Image (cartoon, rainbow, N blue to C red; front, top):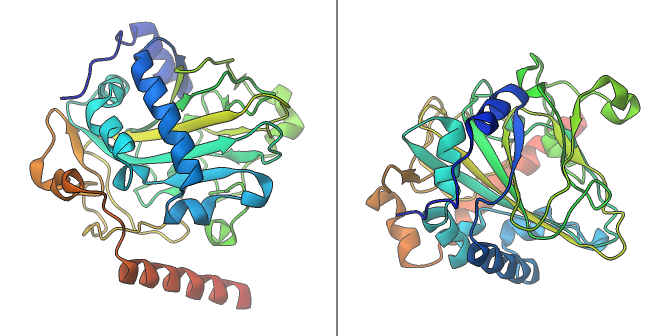
Length: 309
């Protein structure tokens, strides 16, 4: 069973999450989990997965990775054994909690790669009206706005408009969508209620998939910014195979309208489901090369068709 957090979220924190779409929570993870995952992040940066090689910008010192839990045992244990699922349960307000996926964001000191303003829900192959998806962004270094701390527009999870999924490298595949461009928030910062807390290792940002957020480059000359996001949902989230969403490199067996479930999105609470986690429990589970080839062939064909039109 997952570990209990060092404390429960307060009623004020849960109310702020619902009202603002984001909170900064401190003192939830034991030090041993922070130390273990900091070491694991350093290892993954040195040995990225297939997706890590795709999404990282090595010439600019930016390292990213996705679905790390499928291949790295520390990240797998974080899913099933850390307090993360129990913390997510408190903001989701659901008995059932599923792990959606994990994602790594590492900007060394002087990494001049900003994260454009965006919200997460349009990145994902889910019904975009879904609200019960949350991210848990954990820092493993002291961070503030100057060292690329994450910044949010409070209350934007209730905006009626949806925006394009913008990656740090402005991936044209992700931008090829009918959603609106995000507003030029940096040009009119005084018009928004912005939130960017200073954080210490182990502090977490809990935020709704619809809240608009981004970060600057890491302007610090001596402070890295190692962070990863652990994504969680309840059992109401429906799969939707839209274009311009992150590719899923494992055969998930889901059709449009199916609830998110199965071995790619396993249930952790109230209990894990043995058949969902069986393959991953035995050994690291790399994606099938033929399945991956078909996915990237489809992406390439769509990108080519889009550019020619």
